[in-house]
Length: 52
Figure 1 (tube, rainbow, N blue to C red):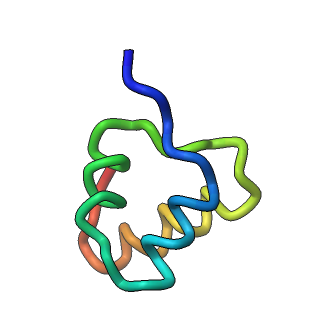
Figure 2 (tube, rainbow, N blue to C red):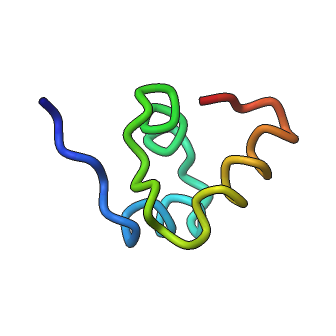
């Protein structure tokens, strides 16, 4: 089983605009759901056509 990326890695991908790993994590259902901004992040990405 692959490890989930930590919240810092997720937000670094967002901050730098390097979204390929972020999209892959979402598609694999591996984002750290406990992170406070997770639901908002998913909602924001869903609004622009990126789905989990």
